Length: 163
Image 1: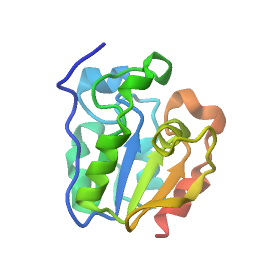
Image 2: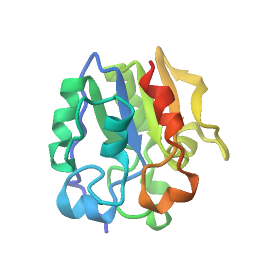
Image 3: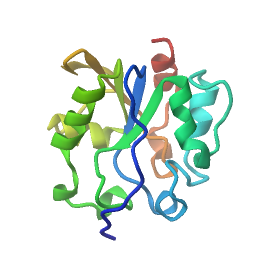
């Protein structure tokens, strides 16, 4: 499950928000598209809370940039469910360097796992965090993964859409 040629980031300057997941899931890796598993609520949620004017198809992921939004993962060298990833797979330094370079208004973690790994904490709360990366604010939202349905709360995603 190790591969150096995983999916490219969707990053640019002047973005309102960059969404950061943990890693590509198995279905996303197979289809080479972010959040491609039909059980994942990411694309539906962005539309439902007003972050996109229509529901994008996972294969249209590069089009998210037209809405001043981007995509990346904290794990770029591996894929699969979180339990299959090793601590060495998480690249906090690389993620921070991307955020420092592009300086989006908000870095939104899609789920607590990526946020905890990035912040070096054992627990984080949903919503805006005290930490920032220069002027970039950090936001943690519930994971849109179907595997995390027990923790799902769309209202936290709605909170992001008002900024």
